[in-house]
Length: 120
Image (cartoon, rainbow, N blue to C red):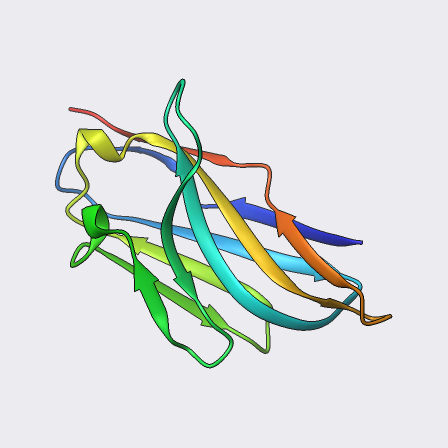
């Protein structure tokens, strides 16, 4: 099994900075796309940013220029640097990773979610 554990959330003032981290572990053979999603109360989960194994990146329009996704393939980590945070960024953020397990079966894993609250 593959586990994803997020860290780094919390409460920050508007205009502030937070860095989310996600560690993947378990029976991983290879990692493909990794990303961050968020969910507002009563809404469906939405994409924030993704990065491929080759390093290409994709961002939601709402976070372009403010958020940066990065990954460390050797450590099975993905990060989300969030700056110029706004109250509307308040949500539960989820880490996602796709890849192959040791017996070459594909997986699509999710972290447990971490709260980010932007408030003055």
